[in-house]
Length: 408
Image 1 (cartoon, rainbow, N blue to C red):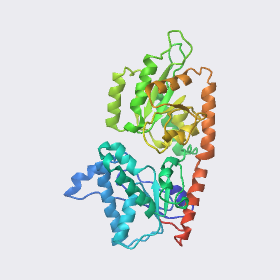
Image 2 (image 1 turned 45 degrees about the vertical axis):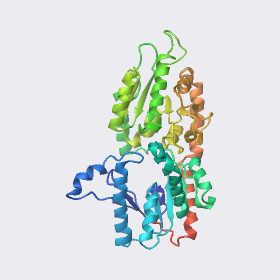
Image 3 (image 1 turned 120 degrees about the vertical axis):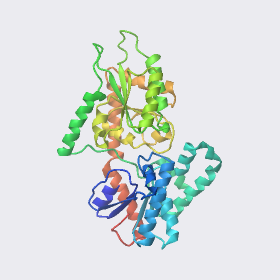
Image 4 (image 1 turned 45 degrees about the horizontal axis):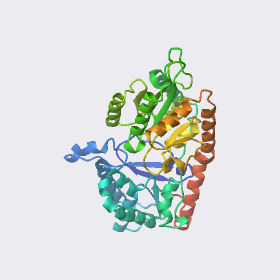
């Protein structure tokens, strides 16, 4: 989004957490939350490795971000044509506006439903779900424009604001890097990954096993438990008999996850007796994603919760590799039975769906599903389509702000 806005001539100031690597984009000014000084510096470890979703660490970082925003907005008197707020930062934007002059238009970048996210992570808060929904509706009404990433989130907006106040802005697939010195180095590292076990090793006379790949974090809503249990069913109950040529042998690689989650699922893999078939590789550089996906024969998205489409699904589609995904709204608002193998979110159904592709010994079905998925990605989820929607959305703000040189 920042690259797109800057490429269009806008100036962007990005206020973000202390953790992470700096990026350089023409037109971007990067501002980070400052680390705490002595005697509070002992708490700086909270600024590192902020997990996905609601957490104590994230709330702590948000409090520090609020202070940085006060310094910029109230003390230094910075003025912006547009405040582009991601997720819960939208509440900081319009509540802090009451401390000072009302800011310009606020754009709410909505990657998920905050109300649903809180209740899913902390079921004990279900009694106050109505209150959380009302807080979210306040955000919809107080902002000039909301950008939900999928239709499921737009449903929440339809009952609160008019269509003129929101635009569905789906994520995009990652484009392969152009051939240059940096990508040559990445290509070399990609080969090292293959040698290091990403690509399947040949089996003695039985043919190479098919490589199934999962990419993403290992949070519970991603359905990793479901995936491992379905692989156990596939391994123990659907394994081909000796000498059978009905199915191909297989292995599964999982890329991503923080150390604690990797350790947790490594123990489960051992408990299910899948040590020789399932491997946790840990995180890999994001720029390698297109190359890594194309090395796979089957891609897996076993997600069990959430209404927003996982961003990786778009890159899955663009790779041209067939996908097995759960039949939940998170997936079905982006793919259907012609562009993915959709299965019910239970281990038997997922095992059956995977087996369907494993029994495709001539690769016709895999090629058909993969080709249809890539066509869909090129038509609906390209950077070109994304930018058209983004600029159309920002054009709606022209009646609110006089300047087209936007500083977010």
